[in-house]
Length: 302
Image (tube, rainbow, N blue to C red; front, side, top):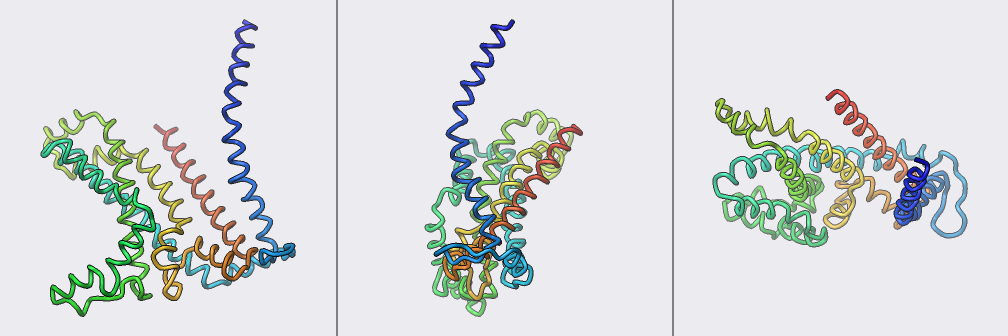
């Protein structure tokens, strides 16, 4: 018995060795920079020389900064673009491809549409930014089509006008995110027993009834994962805004991550930028903890 326990302990120690690279990477890339950023948030520093202690000055300024609160309002809108709308569209598309398109036209057609919807996810952000910048420019495809239909009065500088820029960015984000939601939901649908759909159909349930009664409840774990990951992505959104609008025009598409970047590298208010990053981190961790607790409670109830 003692020999068996000793062998088990030896095996466990051997497994711990495989955790060392990940632990070192976590320390160097995540934990130490986060700790350093936290301390910088209490200082005034321009990136040169030694930081000067400022206490809560950066956080006091943050509370009264209209630019910061404006960026948070934009983040709320982008949460709808990254989470709510793509999840709803992804659910309907996944159910259509799984429960209708595949049965009517076969697996190859379903796979073709799945790959097409997922394509925006694998495109480099710079490529997608250039593509949409051309499509939505004053002489782009959208305005050309509107003018050809006699609707030239509607044509706008969709990205260059502060009135429409945030909506244009939101549309592009929906286009990017739908494929991610679709693929995750399709993977979840593959584990659902097809006999459930057959029995529901025999009982006279329509497509929407099967979606509401079978698909959505059975996909609850996948929906949870998608909502959590896309919420976190919305809170730290940077690349699409950087490529498409650079937070313009007139801060119409400003988000917290870009505001952090702006103060780090343009105004050189490193301490203030660090304070914004700390708030983002707290919000992200807080959301993750809440969602994980809700999921654990639901699993316990089941």
